[in-house]
Amino acid sequence: MQALRLLRVIERSVLVTLFLTMVLLYTGSVITREIGGTFASRFAWIEEAVRLMNLFLVFLALGLALERGKHVGITNLREKLPDHLHKLVQRSIDVVGVIFSLYVAWLGWGLVQFVLKTGQSSPTLGVPMGYIYIAPVVGFVLLALRYGLSLFGVIDRFAPQESDA
Image 1 (spheres, helix red, strand yellow):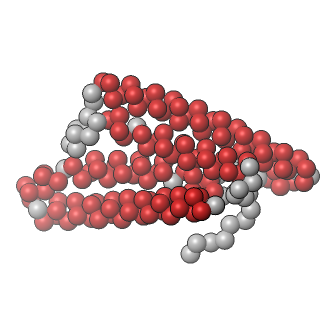
Image 2 (spheres, helix red, strand yellow; image 1 turned 135 degrees about the horizontal axis):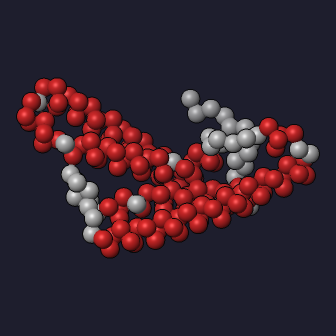
């Protein structure tokens, strides 16, 4: 449980840092365009950086969102099932979730390797494009971890969640 708590803290810290950095960069970009004139063209990289950060923000939040019950789900049928079937359906969802998430992460890893071999890089930042494709790999591994933790009863993602506000 201590490792899971540490993982949550790291995930939250990375997500908050990414989000605040995106806001600051984009705000700076808008201000620069308004008052910078031709000087603003030097900051064209900000648009691409914010888009790439948004990709990482979305994929890195997958595991936390699942753990907190924030993923979209159809609960009408599941809630009307008898208790023993309800548990079976929940476990089935977790098993399929683990398998699917690991499969997508595996496919993503293959894509990362392929794109790195092509030598492509992003237009304004010059970042190798293969590094950008790491976001879904990490995100789906974190998602598989949360499905696995739910499957083995370490977390109860189906329990009603209290608000963070």
